[in-house]
Length: 70
Image (cartoon, rainbow, N blue to C red):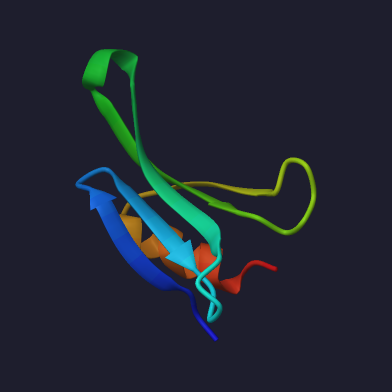
C-alpha cells in the first residue's frame, strides 16, 4: 500500500506508513544559484542511510518512486 503524504511546506513532503511512522521524504533541491530545480526522493528501509532514490522532475514522480521502494 502507498504512503500517506503530507506537505510540511511548498518544498517538502513527508510520507507515512499505515501505522503513522514517517518513512519517506520528498524535497525540492535548488542548485546552480537557483537556476536548477529537482525533487529528491528518499525512503527509510531500516538501514543507517536509507534508500536514496535520486532526483525527479515533479514531486508526484518522486512520491511514486518512494512509494514503490522497499
